[in-house]
Length: 445
Ligand SMILES: Cc1cc2nc3c(=O)[nH]c(=O)nc-3n(C[C@H](O)[C@H](O)[C@H](O)COP(=O)(O)OP(=O)(O)OC[C@H]3O[C@@H](n4cnc5c(N)ncnc54)[C@H](O)[C@@H]3O)c2cc1C
Ligand SMILES: NC(=O)c1ccc[n+]([C@@H]2O[C@H](COP(=O)([O-])OP(=O)(O)OC[C@H]3O[C@@H](n4cnc5c(N)ncnc54)[C@H](OP(=O)(O)O)[C@@H]3O)[C@@H](O)[C@H]2O)c1
Image (cartoon, rainbow, N blue to C red):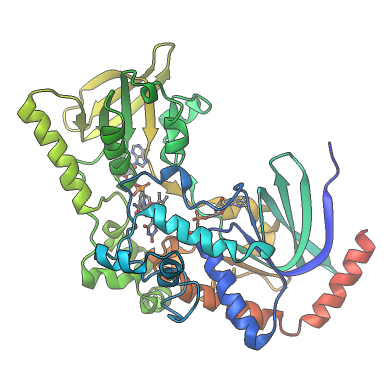
């Protein structure tokens, strides 16, 4: 095995993941550097290059939030990294205005994010998956963090930083019935949709029976894409609920995604926070944009008119068992109203079953004894015991304390600047720390 590369640089901040959350942070830190001096910042991302949920960027997919909630505008509308400036730079500002929408397609927003990421090439490394974050100990104190990453070729790199910001996003949720089918190319999560579909027989027009599991936005977008792009595909849309339900984006409700709501949420006790998450669940989870629901209903209605039942809508249905065979994947489907079991065979199964947010626990496991129950302060810094001097921040893993906007684009510019402010104050007085770290690194080599 090749030896790990150990960098001798002590970074001020290493960001894990370079999605929208850490992109927004990169901008906020750059803004502060103008008045407060630069920090040594590095972002690591496991993808080969910048892509925003790249395998889900189907033609019909639109942003589910106003473009004004880009990486900067809420905090600094004059920033050169705004979506409007991106449009202007790419010669499409007038055309975009003519579109008359707040909701660009996700392909375009991906291109915007990519364009911003391109401005931070010297601060980012792609193709490096962070495996673990470990303590750098001095006299029983965690003075810094060791970030261990691995490239696609298997080369490990060890870096040292005084703070880390974990913004690694969600991980595909795989229902229990499908766990044993990991590795079967006919069963995949929606996060791999485009790449996996490009290898299916329907690409060359062969008939296929496809099951989509789930009733959220991902399931709805996969259904529309299969219907529109693959005429030889017959889809069963299989959901536990009784109907596809609309995402509530009405204006009063939408205030839960305002920066002020984060303060309200954070000031509540645990029970009240949980109640508020449940109350507003229908803004984001297990829900679908109303226009997409209407399109899907229209497709099923036209089937009734034509009498050709191409697709099936299987609500109130649970997958009891999934068995892989030579001819297909057999799903045992239980109707939760009648109790009836139906076994159906599919050529492919798409798990549009959402995402889990547990990656932080895996990455920070070597620091577990200092972290308690992964509670975060208002500034998104993990609350550690006194022995931990290093700063550990999280974005996208704080929904329980900071509210539903935590996993979304809603307040990125504000959150990024709150973290940037905290990082600067944490780094102040860093000279003592730096000399301790120099000693530690010298003795380690
Ligand atoms: C299909 C889809 C569409 C969405 N559309 C919207 C929308 O329209 N509006 C909205 O507000 N929200 C939307 N969301 C929610 C989404 O979470 C946010 O838009 C946004 O992507 C969150 O940014 P992030 O940087 O926190 O996480 P992510 O965008 O998930 O980025 C995390 C990054 O970390 C990297 N990474 C992960 N693990 C590691 C590791 N161990 N080492 C190194 N790198 C790692 C990943 O490669 C990725 O680039 C959508 C989510 C999905 C799945
Ligand atoms: N265009 C866009 O901007 C776009 C596109 C896709 C996704 N997104 C965003 O991405 C996030 C996630 O959306 P999502 O649709 O992927 O996930 P989601 O909203 O969490 O929905 C997951 C669906 O899977 C079902 N499910 C979960 N576990 C299951 C199990 N064990 N067995 C059967 N069904 C199960 C859920 O059913 P229950 O309801 O019964 O629990 C739900 O219907 C949201 O923020 C969404 O807005 C945005």
